[in-house]
Amino acid sequence: MASGGKPWFLVFVLLFVFELQILVDGEPQVPCYFIYGDSLADNGNNNALLSLAKSNFPPYGIDFVDGPTGRFTNGRTTSDIIGELLGFTDFIPPFATARGQDILRGVNYASGGGGIRAETGRNVGGRISFDLQLLHHGITVSRITALQRNLTFTREYLSKCIYTVGMGSNDYINNYFMPQSYPTSARFTPDQYAAVLIQQYSQQLRTLYNYGARKVVIFGLGLIGCTPAELATFGTNGTACVDMINNAVQLFNNRLEPLVDDFNRNLGDARFTYINITGISAGDPSSAGITVLNTPCCNVTTTTGLCIPNQAPCSNRNTYAFWDAFHSTEIINVLAATRAYNASSPSDAYPVDIRTLAQLQ
Image 1 (cartoon, rainbow, N blue to C red):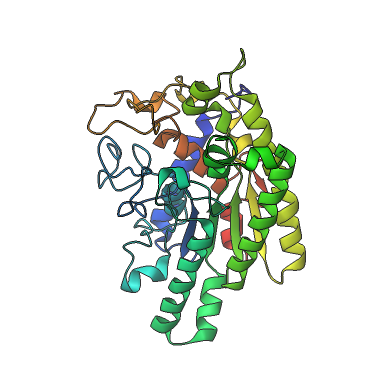
Image 2 (cartoon, rainbow, N blue to C red):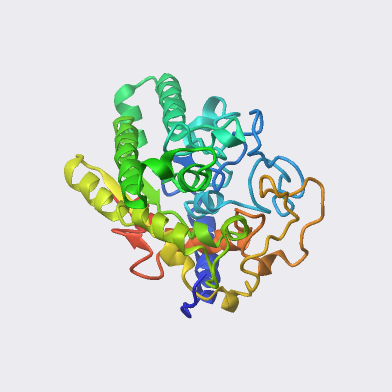
């Protein structure tokens, strides 16, 4: 993470204010919240899969109210915290276990190892690609329509919900930068690969729109080249992070604002927005007490970069940026979620933050 002297301490003040507001208002700001993504948002969808990308064991969830649930962190995910900021008093359930009336407040489809491309993540075994997550959402929409027994009402209901999408990290980590397992880096330059990903992503997001989504939040990719796993694999040649990876990822991120503009201009009543996670990450977290930036809090395996089961993690978790070799700690998730919800800089969100998006009619 680069230094930039941003006032990280203000994040905690804002979070406290918003949580107070939620308690006062009592009702969620939107009727439902749907989540699509990878391990950064997975809350249990991979638990029953034959997959290396699983986290339903200690020390994962050591700071979470329900313990190890399949979340790839010590506590809440960014999506969990956004749900709280939106006013939901219960966490959005994973598609794998969501049943009955629970689906009316939203569903989490995210899956560790999942990507924009179908082949992405096959090295970890079972995972749910974005295409399959969208298929699962189609099932949910049918179930909601059956529960509400009024297609017109259901369409109106779904148009008011918030949809967050965070896909693409695995298309780099578990695809492009794994040449021993995937041919993409031999077939495409980094710029060509970003263009190919965006083309497919655009079609997938249009499918989401066709299912009734109107308030859609697209999360940019973070500084993948700064993760402990990539640092250990590629080295840095004296720089803080793996610049080759971060530069490639930025080519993808650079195409997201134009994509949002295209959707908002050409899709009727669409309200897409972009969250600049790279920009949010660029700051000095030490003012919030986060001082360990490139070492995992838990002991990780050399094969997967995930925590070794049942081993004690670091005790001072609020000082660590990374929980395991890929995933952030809850304290980092709080910072990211709070600024995504209420931008503290004009560059955090485009054209609006999640709080504003929720209020739009």
